[in-house]
Image (cartoon, rainbow, N blue to C red; front, side):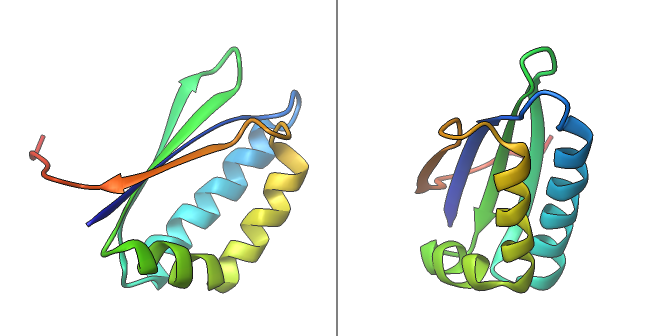
Length: 102
């Protein structure tokens, strides 16, 4: 499986708009993309408006090809341009080795 970790900072005054956009993107990704197994959104630091996403995909193609060509991804990219501090988004990818149930 392919894991993706994203961190970013939201522009001042844009947190609620960002939250609506990422909620719609995460929901559509899990609902509409069979190659996505989970999409978690984490608030890292409310005062600094820092967020992270932890996404699990079947393989790298499910992320790079299927996810990034999905219709809802275009809406997400437009929201990023309006709500995220330019240059603050980092994307780290890797192979998921194992997980435990909580």
